[in-house]
Image (cartoon, rainbow, N blue to C red; front, side, top):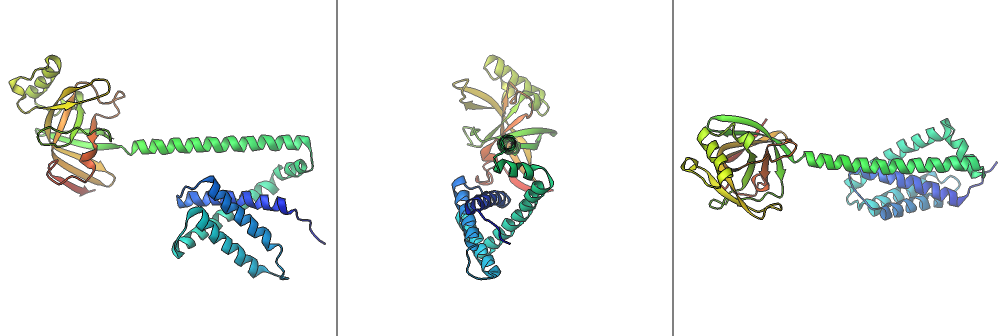
Length: 311
């Protein structure tokens, strides 16, 4: 009894399986690589597997294992630039685990559904089976495209959510919880002290300001003049796309607490510009943070005292 093996078919089958396994392994390792590198790695793996069929030894099991293990190591180095024994061992573990689970899934689908039957019929030239195989290929392709778009959308959403923070504002013995957006484009500074400036809309600020200061700010935005009651108010010049230049009324808040993951950063004496209009059209946040406030690169004292408090 003997088997007829078509080496080209065997090469293509192993090539696609290795390509899928390398893609899954890259996702587990959180390493992004190009299609060309994965294709080169898959071609190397398929070539080495086909080579083992021509070994001169009668049994050849240890030799075959050695060749495939060497091929797997080479794939890790070529595709993912793996360096070091520890990283290589981790790659091999994830590579063979992916191969085990994906291989099991493919085998189950092939033998326990009618997919295998139709693929065999399509290989023999059955037009109906070939049409079904083409439809299946289109469905798989559409699913891959949809999955890629959905994954990109989720990553973008996660990245956007990472820019939002819960903060606690303190001033005049009053406290106000608010949501804040970290705007990487906000580089406003108070002209005299050169401290970074955060933005807060009037609806949020009025719960912290005393009546005279609130009235002075509102009058400034209506008339463009600042009366004596606004002695503690500073003027912050700004430039924007919709308006070439202008002035914002600002105060120094006693304290701003920013919750970042499992710790809280506390800033004192923070320069805060008050905007006439809401800073968010959807009212999703009420404060816009300055990137320099949270960068950790400024010296303590530039923005007041900053301490970290673990929860």
